[in-house]
Length: 172
Image (cartoon, rainbow, N blue to C red; front, side, top):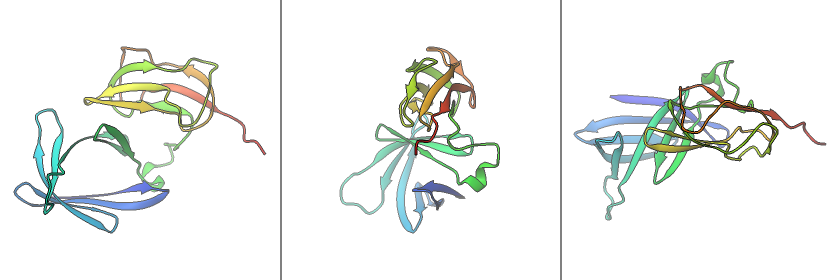
């Protein structure tokens, strides 16, 4: 079994592949770098990965879930979004259009904004719990919050619009 996708890193497409070698061993390529791991599925949906050939046990647990054409990965308490290149997104998905959408079905843990608030592009506006992970969601644009549909404690479907931010006009 071999999986292959491209994701964005620093604005450039990077090929990522995972190939089953044998038993519990997998070979993972990220760009030009190749890593080999022993993988153990965990009952909670995670995977324990242990690098092959290292002296010390440097294993870690990872969780992953699709988020539209992107993929979200949680490793060592941090959630990373692997963004698909624009060519794979299609014309309907704007990268930073100011609308925060639920990357997957989950429960809203907190809403940190209200209509009329001025927000920064990287400011956390909604915290979502999904697949035993906490996702801090930002609009990706600086501006003014126009609408908030997210409500604390409510389960939302993947793709649901949670907050809309109107982009601040460019200065200069």
